Amino acid sequence: MNRYTCALLGSLLMSGLMANTTLAQAPAEKKPDAKPATPAARPALRDRSEILARQLNLSDEQKPKVKAIMDEEMKKFTDMRTTGRNLSLPERQAKAKEIREATNVKMKEVLTPEQYEKYIKPGLRVPAVRPGATPPAGGAPPPAAPPAK
Image (cartoon, rainbow, N blue to C red):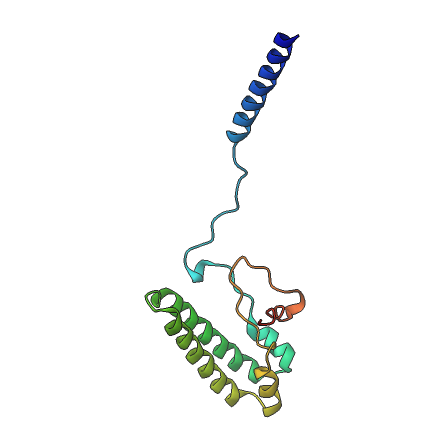
């Protein structure tokens, strides 16, 4: 009886090891194509100017101006990410703050006082979404950050 049990356990162990080996060698699922390396080759990012146009009720005259400002801001942030890799975290944060403040000054020139008040309110500004990320439904702003402890 002891011999029979050992043989059964041994064969189960061997079949388990063989099954594990074949699973490990199974071809990997085909992954989607890699993202293009250059921003120009990527699919268009979610257009923040369109979302702001809806949220702020922009006039037809304001829409192209806001789009140009948002595009310029995006280009500056992209440049900062590519050329500012050698900057420390506080330096990158300061640079990002400068870019946002410059955008706010330009937006203040284009928007009415009421629109600008809505624009600078926390939660209204629509952050850029990186390619491949899923934008929130309906263009709603992302969920608020958890409260600080």
